[in-house]
Length: 290
Image (cartoon, rainbow, N blue to C red; front, side):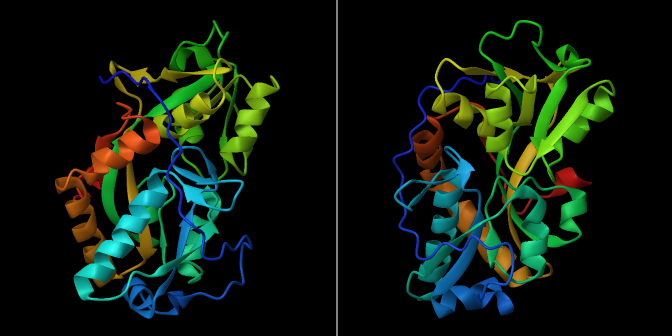
């Protein structure tokens, strides 16, 4: 199994926000049509996270940075160029985990790139392009934590994750004695861990490594294994409107080129320091859902 060490978290990627909407509902969007229509029209609403360093982060100056931000931009620009359209402007929309399917179904976003793990339940509600990367579930604990070294160390401990995300429930199933604490955002979990109100936080290694790097010396990331294998495999995808086959095919074509061109490795290195917790996915291959 790959060891998950983060060399340097580079947050130098910046993208000017065309118009950030923070409202949870009621925003106007070009999503009344499919994603390709929105790209052709020149304005696309993209859902992502605003509080995940290295993946989806709204910077103090209003720009956006992170791997998911860069991947979304690459997809939109590739599709536009492939069709002879101008590069669209992007309206970045904050997309908490619990709201992702609802925002797509309500037509409030055209696509979502927000550490969106593909699973069978979600695939019933939305289409997924990708996967574009594979990562694994891990733990974030205080730097001086000695009792928790992995999954079994969570026995009787307070474990935090976000509402609408699956990692904490998976731990609960494997270890019923764990006490779950859920918040709306990962940053709230991080603050609770900093204050000593919880014992550990769990989600994908990519997310945890970003928070650890943001606060040197405060936290550490622990691998989780079960029977010698990664506790979970998390395949990140791009969420689109259900049955938007044409849009999904276009996203997969863009992601295939992203990998084959070597640009994906460049983006991972820029945003996550080339971290070994990330492996490329195979766009269009959802056989892992079977």
